[in-house]
Length: 144
Image (cartoon, rainbow, N blue to C red):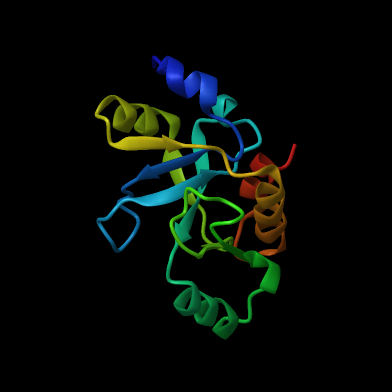
């Protein structure tokens, strides 16, 4: 598989892409954050999705009695590519093959954004590690 140069140069833990995902109920594109420690060395990318429905997501997390650190709120001051206050549920990882990402890239279905600040990436990693819903195999791909 030929990985486009732009992906080879930019894909790392904390990379943000704006794209549609068939695993979501909405057909609208969303922001996704790459969490793999070594995404280019992995066949599967582990992604977290951003949502602007903060209160709805917060209620869902706490209704399920999931750890509070598995829910990360991001306001525009911390990451200004998000146009309003958003959240990331660290209890639900999306898997996308590197091959599928490359194919979407070639079709111009993926828009790259600036990387998430390291401080926020660390919060997401902590949230995933605290989640009882994320497998040990996936957690191992996230930490070095």
